[in-house]
Image (cartoon, rainbow, N blue to C red; front, side, top):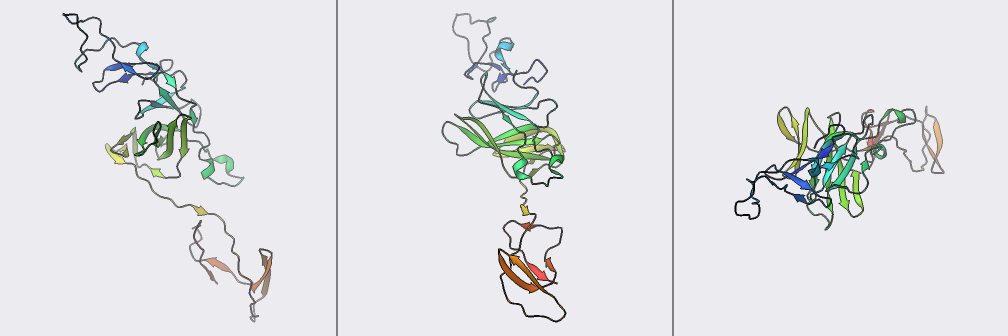
Length: 279
């Protein structure tokens, strides 16, 4: 891929690293070498040793729709994905090409983190919810739906601290990316590449290739309300009786201090029952 301004284009190569022409349908064609012809006038041989013809822009796929293409990824069916980083933006755009044609509408990774982050009014405007990447890699599904491409697309964040995983689907309705609520940290990411191999994703770190591994992070509730069953509490000398309401019912009890059993800095898991003690 050539990402120079006003020269943005991609070229297809075969296993012998020979440039292949790309048609609108995506079929790659080997350029004809018209300088050297068989002496007997027969057809040109198609062996890997055949010298390629001249490389021209007619063989390239123009990426005029992309503002700043930074990465490319091939899909199992021959289509390709382009990671585009518009200048001045805080998000990336994923585009899909089949041959020389764009497939569907591009996916803009703006505000994709918003459903997963809850902030109060004072801090809601201090965080950018968008995702901007420097490279990506595709991990195909083992059981795709016939006629479509599915899997996970991993995108290395621009700061190199982590990768984001997206549930990927490409069918008749176009390209679909849905952010997966998973955490994939990267330690000492060198910035060379994010690659897919052997059913795994790897990144470079200190001249080694490290497998990208998920680090599960449970989600927690920030607040909780405790509903106590109504009961009659005998009067205790030296303590004041407290009368409050819960769920529309009167609750009587002893005025005391309730403290979470865990440390104050921790939050309660969303599905965990709080353990409390009276102090």
